[in-house]
Image 1 (cartoon, rainbow, N blue to C red):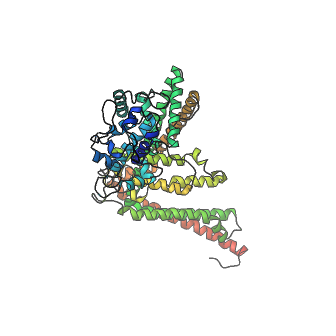
Image 2: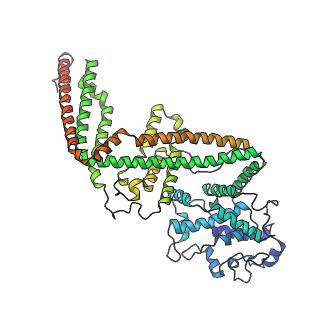
Image 3: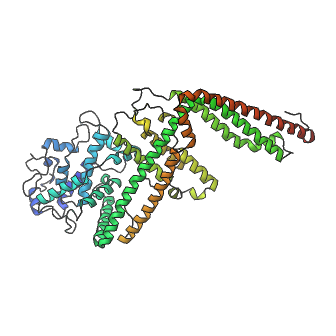
Length: 544
């Protein structure tokens, strides 16, 4: 995990600032003063049973655990203890931090517990170092975890309201020019603030970092603009913002449906190859041979002076593509019977939380679609230097990265991965796309941050983004419909579901193959006749 500041390090920074914090009261300075080399505040003071436990005017201690346990908040080895959320919140109020820094610390505390326990199954005293877990996550795992991390904004707001009201006069005002601590936030605006902070990963930053300070200034400015706007502007802004979030979620849902349908179609193709692969390959071979002979004959008719070598050179690249497709078909047929997993061979997502798994898939899909979006491809550093043909080929390569791979097939019915694309498969697709693009310079990290310097500008940006999202949703629905109504897949599914008809289908394949072969022989005979006539006129070498 990159650019992450641990909660323990953040707490230490804030503790060290106690003696220079202008918001600290004289009473606090008298009780917790630095004597000689001894720190004003030590780790042990977070424990409620410490002789100089951190406490408010009313006597309520900041910490709710014993001193020995509180010291373990800073032990990121196997003996680590996670501080209760309420303790972190009380500490922030005790230190007179503003809302954004307080929220960042609370979210950081909940994130470390969530990422360790829920995502990595960490347990105290099991030999695992928590620092390694927090810092070793790859980008894909991190994206998935962030998608799953959903602290309840209403719960946090209620907690902060209760603490603020209980511990006056310490925390009714923040240190920022007398701004009320909760800064006028309503449940809905506070909920969005939580989402913005998580999506922007600002809870990863140090509380005294420039990044968090910039974010704080941004959200305050947006909130101030909203408050200063007319009632109609506030109403429209809230509606457009809610619509923006809803459209993004709808688009993610459709993208997941697309990939699951792509998987379903691939299952049908695998079953088809098991049932009719041998007959289909024989027919495709005959079809390609017929097409090749027909093209040769037509070229010879149009160019009487051409030799067989001239014709072969003209068709070489085109025929290579056909042979490559045939080779892929042979490989798929050979693999198809071996892709069916037996129950218990692989859990196929069994035991995983389906809701969490789906959200992780949506996160990776969002990254993929951002990279594939034409408007973003246009900003690729090398894109402007591509010819139209190269751009078309690039688009083909990128889209092919989403193709179903053999290891995603064969899960038995009833298994999670039988009906939906695997997270690993989507991550691999994202890696392939990133490899194809190289270093595209495109930011794939989502930010729920609305652009614009004024409320009207923000409204304009929201409306434009919503129109773009609506267009993307229409395009995604069309893509989904094409997969759902694919004629070839639908026809194969109908045939596969009627085993009694399989013998007749195989016989039809064989008859069509034989017919193609006979037609091909006629074409070859006519071509040879033309070549022999041409050779007597133009080519002294004996006929092939």
